[in-house]
Amino acid sequence: MNALKSFKSLALAAALVLGAATPAVFAQPMMGHGGHGGPGMHQRGPGGHGGFDGQRLMHMLDDIGASEAQITQIQTIFRTAREELRAQAGQGQGLHLQMLQLWAQPNIDAAALDALRKQQLAQHERVSARMQAAFVEAGRVLTPEQRAKMLDLAKKRMDRMQRRANRGG
Image 1: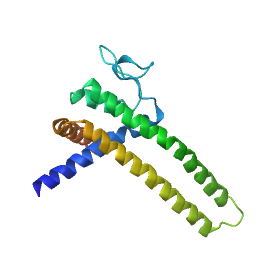
Image 2: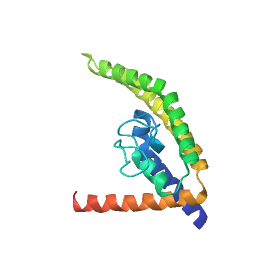
Image 3: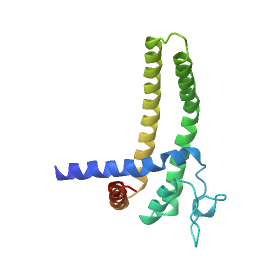
């Protein structure tokens, strides 16, 4: 029972850690680790920390001792997922625009809006399933010890965030 609880905690932490990087992973080209990216990308070495929000994942990979090979594999996993999801982003935007257009009509068609809402939910589910697959694949690149370190880092970060929220800033 304790092992199951520990596994659930690890899975949750990995999802939180990797999920925190998701917007930047899909918004930025992930080719900057190891000094191969452009300005603002994460680079190793003195002063080599870039400026995009998803760099937390790169920092965590550094903090857990991920090798260059592991980092490259994880970057490739998320790059592939990003490319696969780009087409779906256009579909999601189209659904959102259709929903706004229906809402702006003189007579609001609740049934049509609900049908679009269900399409949006299906769209979100496809994106979520693809990201989950990428998280699982990336997790398999890391060792159990590295994933445990990532869990510890995620818990510490969550604790810091909770303390800030409790004191109002």
